[in-house]
Amino acid sequence: MASPKVPSRFPFEYPKGWFQILWSDELSPLQAVTRSRFGRELIVWRDNDGRPVVNDAFCPHLGAHLGVGGVVTPSGLRCPFHGWTFNSDGILSEVPYTTREIRKEMLQTMPCAEDNGHILVWNGPPGQEPEWSVPHVEEFGSESWGEYFTRSEVVIKSCCQELSENITDINHVPILHQLSHIESMSVDSSGPNRTIRITEAVTTPLGINHTDATIECLGLGYMVVRFASAVEICSISSVTPVDLTTVQVNFSWLIKREKGRPRLRRVGQAIADETLRILREDATIWENKAYLERPLLLPEDAHIRQFRAWAKQFYY
Image (cartoon, rainbow, N blue to C red):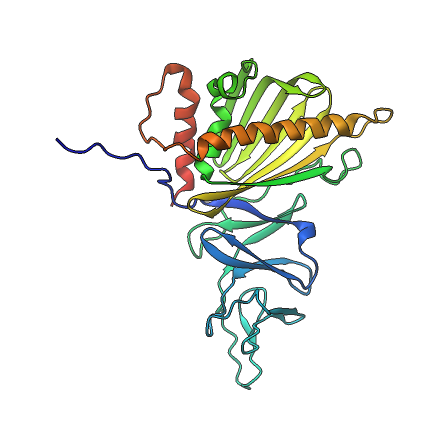
């Protein structure tokens, strides 16, 4: 008798799309920081015009790590080993021990964008331009909403597919999270965009809030959630692969200002804290489950089947 096939924990490659790599205020002008993402060492820096740039962290000359002793100058990113300098397009612009002009793209550069207080990087087939743009969130920085009132980040041993699929898996909510059944949900998909409308009950230390939420997903890595309950809240969450077995989850929270309501921020913080509590409960499942390519789904699980059909477009 043949041995049964063992389910895979992580059968996915890295999906294409936009993924948050930093908050904007984590990167000052002419500063460089390193991050491990997509199974690669990356260096993120601002050029002389303040634009963010994302490159492979290893110098193509002899492999020095550009984030360990490298310097950002007005001419670009300078290697600490031999002083080779690369501009924001990855083109070699200076070599201190030669007079020949070598202006050639040598340092691999990933497309990046900056909006909503985030620096995002595009992951996709090598040499391919981004297929869609990062949506501007109107609430961020506006007079009525201001800046983020709180932010958080969590590292989870899972993958983008699992976390994104969980959004429409409404049948686990009363079992795992001990919350009321979701009263209603609708899903609309168009290309890389997916809009989910949910009415649910959220328990906070200040009582139960009946919340109407609209969730706008852009691919598997960037999501804008708008809550309408006792307060108006806009949350931007991102899921970025560290490697094939780990993701970095970032939350950025905005709350609409209202005069005469000093407790608003306290309520918003309670909702943000409750979201993190729920996420950690989910993470206990994600970090120990297997991904079944042919799960035993009931008619009540139809949204999971629909999600998987939509998500296939992000793998190349």
